[in-house]
Image (cartoon, rainbow over all chains, first blue to last red):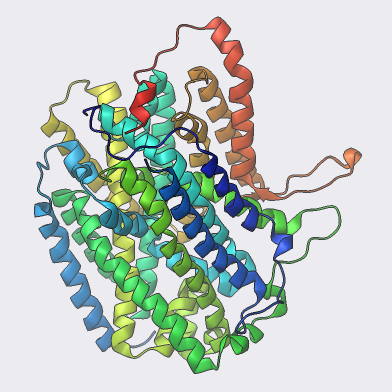
Length: 70
Length: 517
């Protein structure tokens, strides 16, 4: 592979990567979200909270992707 | 199940016919010389962002997933939802570690994780440990895809008693074996596009139609027994269900991309950038998986468990019949055909990729490493094709002749086994610091302990770990995989400086710049 053809690149470390920790903290501690209220459209908090984090996680990943592309 | 549902069956067969044609036609897609192992086994590494999305999505979200997760929600309730935090946590891991693996494998023409470990650490025994773990973890997983297929075939009303009852399964598998042999990874990649589109349509239809029929989400959740609706609050002196939920999610997330079929899917991408972009796009499937877990609750609310027309199905397939019963109850027959075809095809895609991944491992890391050191390209590809056939028929024989419960046990154990390759593979792409023999000892300890914990916990993946009574007896039951990989890592860290003092110079076929574009 030709070392000269650098397409997109990224470094070993970027402070942006710390944003990923947010996703882990959001879902790894069940006591924080193991409840029915506040419910939304009839769906208990336990369920819509975790589904929301799927979306938030994807958005965070997209942010980190664009922030760390060279 | 007394009568065949002809409308649904015809739709099902038509869709299957289409993907059979597609599987064979795929050999000509982005054409390459299929007598080369990387063309057959990795699709020539030509799959861009979108195809990778379909392939990896179809690979990770299997027929077994779509049947078993709602079945768990139907039977056990909230705990089944661990699949959602699990799939939230896998994407940072995919984003950070796996493009590095892609670049180093591309540079050195590595086809498997064991190839990488061999090059990075220069130790053929460590590589063999990774290889055997990979093959052992994959085999029961292939067998379980057949369970998903069996359930929907049963749902169509096709009689399934005796050996003639296994005939549809055998036919499906022969088709699968034939197009995988001829087209390699291109076959499941092309079929994954169809399958994933069908699955999304089915999931969204279910999530829209059923609540409308039942009068809203409020009514559905009200029908779920309170004990199942949330996680049980732990008693004193234990982390209880909270610990189990969190460790299942985290442990499964760490293990997922170590499976050979995940790595094969990733390595077939055309660039590290495609992998990173997919880390942001694949969560679409997670959302769908969450919806499907809720479908398990829909099945409770509709009361399919109590309806006489589904009694035979539940008797034969247990809670796995919840989703098929719900679809039969809710949708017109033609759409049931579409939905069941989605699940059925959803069995073939991962089964194909898993068998290719296992074949790649055997061919490169057992046959070429220990038996024939200089195969021609043609010989290598040919060997992989044969091994993938053997692996598939082995899985089929297992499902036909052995009670299904054993396949389930083995697959649960497989997760505990595959996570032991985390230090060498996932940490290996970041650093060479570890001593290769220390890694091997860590792997052996994790594997031995994990297996014994699994057996001690009665063939379940969660172990009731606890402090001794003298220290207060605080219990933290959790996923054995997580506990044992932690031990594995600690051993590797402690032994590395020790073995380095005693041992030879470090070998590493890779350099730091290999891990970047």
